[in-house]
Image (cartoon, rainbow, N blue to C red; front, top):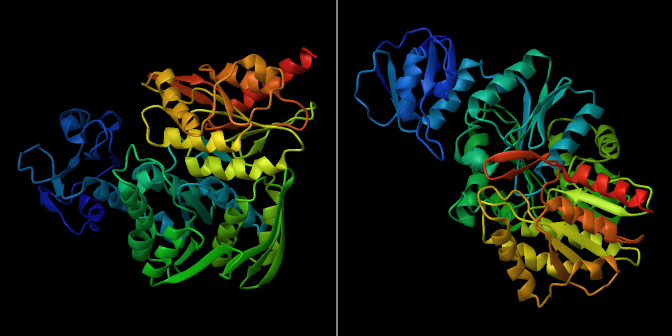
Length: 510
């Protein structure tokens, strides 16, 4: 494509040199530049792409996009812009032919529930025989292809490339999890969404965002900034009206909206919700009539995810029969209240809950489902992330568990014992005490007691060995992840694999 065509959608720009140079590709990493590529120098969290312009030129970059007012001559055309990330997104969309214009696209954002809601929408679309692709936290998938997801929402050129590949392979509908990081870093600029879904807002990512208010504004931007710019004629927002941020967002939008809630009237509202270890049931009132819902998903909170997906599917024209079939067909989601089957009559669940709110929701659901047994929780907190939530998570688990094993999550560059000490402050504030593993294995039942076991494998093994029929073991924090980050190393580790291994070892030991 010609450079002039690629930069046509950039409102603010200054071009130094030939606008009509031929461009063969778009790159934002200097090490991946090929001859004839347009190199867009973006600011990263650790470094600045402008420091790598020389390398990009050495590798054959045919033009540059730079942020600011650089008058230096580089020997190739230069496009100066106020925001290189925004420029990268719009250029990428143009380079790949604006694929989102030719598909129905749903963006799902919120602190918790994005992945489950995305899986539910996908299941509903599949039940209506619609070809669906998903860009999400667990993976990117379409047409039988599954690609590991290094981040929830990829960089803008990768988004546009995959959307083009999906379109070319016959995909007609796409569900995209949209993270606050992606919105802040302009990755979804140039995407044309038909539907935006807001799940909820609770504390998370305050290691990145300077405040909860700024985090909220990033989430809102999908609805107040991105979707209003979409070319789609029937733009629709689907909002959780039981969440204060969702209710507030409702008042700010001037295009089509659908709300969902429990126990009060909305576009979709549920009543008679019942929850067991085998799933949830409810009656959901919808614009098309009442629907009896039966889902194998565990956790009363999933009724919100189900209604969010119902709203998105309805906005896309999916009928009630396919919606109902899609709900019933989805039996589990990797690492989201995922049951680890076993023949020991033990209820063992692995879940991604890694925020105070997500932990509270999960434990509030599980606690009354104990069959005369105990709720045993294994959890930790990630290193190099929001430290303020660690004692908050500790307090939640101290209040709602019978026993807890505090352990490592992804410690990254931090010392695991220091992270565990931060969590422990929450237990101390709830007047809970530490005890030794012998008491846990012996069946003691002091509510809120805890152990500290730094090795996560050992922590999971201890909890599984201690469990008796009627107990629930809840392993939280990593969910679908199949690795553990220690220092700068990414080591193989999967809570589900470790839980199964501990169950097998327990069975072999009688």
